[in-house]
Image (cartoon, rainbow, N blue to C red; front, side, top):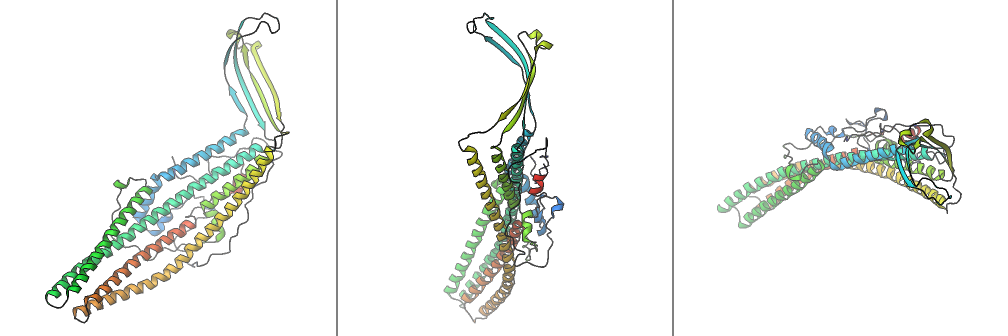
Length: 486
C-alpha cells in the first residue's frame, strides 16, 4: 500500500454521462473567514525553509531536512515507512476513493445477465383447463436499467463522495504531518536528555573529586565533618539526577520506537556525541490567508463542508420525480434444444416514473437536517481556521521570546561559571567554607542544563511552527476547481 497519496486523487476521474438540464441544491462556495492581514512577531529573514506554492503540485516536503541532521532524516524515513497509524490512514483513503467510485457508477446504465431454470406445477382448476401438470422453462435474460438524472441527484451524490475522498486524503496528510512532527520532537527531546546526561555526569565526576579533596582537607585539619557531609550529600543528589535522566531517556526511546513501528525491546537510539545547534533555523510564516492552502486539516474541514453542501442537493432532489429506463431481452423456452431459436426471443422496454406525493414529512425533515449539518460544517471550518491562526501566532511569539531568553541564558552561564571558579579558588585559599563552593557548582550545573533545555525548546518551537504552517504541504487543487472538474 502506498503511503504517499496526493490530494488530487488521480484515481478519481470526473465523468459526465449527459448534460443535466437542472441540478437542484446550492453550488459550493468557500465561506468567508476572519483572516488578518499579517502575523505578529515575524522576522524579515525568510530562512532556508521554503513553503511550496500551489503550482508545485507537491503533496508534502521533507521539511525536517532544514535541521541538517542525518539521524533525524533516517528516523523520519523509517516512521513514514512503518508507522501503523499512517497505514490505517492510507487504508481510509482507499476506502473513500472506492466510495467515490461507487457513487460515480450511478451515472452509467446498469447491465446484468443471467440464466434461469424454472420447473413448476400449475393448477388444473384455476381456469378449468387441463394444462400439463409440470412445466420446465429455460431462460437467458439480459436486464438493463438507467436512472435519468434530470434533477442532479446522482450528480450531487457523486460530488459529495468526491469531496469526502478529498477530505480523507487531507486527513491522511494531517496524520503524516503530525507523525513527522512528533518524531522530530521526540528526537530533539532525546538529544536534550543526552546533553543533560553529559552535564550531570561531569557534575558527578566533579563532585567525586571535590569529596576526595574535602576528605583530604579534613584529615589535614583544614575542613570539618560538616564540609564532608555536604560534599557527600551533593554527590548523592547529583547521582539521583543522573539516574532520573536515564529513566526518562529510556521512556522517550520506547515512545519513539512506537512512532517508528518498531518493538520497543528491539529499538535503540545511540546517545548523541555532539550538542544540538544553539540556533534553530528560521521559518517564514507567510500570510495568514495562505493557511487555507497549506494546512491539511483546514483542507479536510473545507472538503467536509463541500460534501455537506452537496448533500443538501441530494435532499432537495428527493422532492422531484425520478425516471428510470428499464429493459430486458433474452431467450425463454420450455425446450432447451429450442432455447436460442428466433421464436424463443423475448424483450421488454419502458420507463418507470417515481413521483413523491406524500412522505409524512420525511423529505422535508431530511432537507432540514442536511442544511443544519452544512451550518455545523461551516462553523467547524471557520473554527479550524481560527485554531490554525492561533497555533501559528503562538509559535511565532514563542520563537521571538525564546530568542531573547536564550541570549540572557548565555550570560547567566558565563557568569555562573566565573562564580564557580572564584568560589573554588577562595575555598582552596581558605577564605570560605565548602558550602559556598557547593552552591556555586549547583548554580553552574543548573544554568548549563537550563541552556540545554532552552535550546531544545527553541528547536521544538521551530517544529511546532512548521507543523502549524502545514509542513510545506500544499493543496494541489482547490475544492471549487475539483467540483467544477466533473
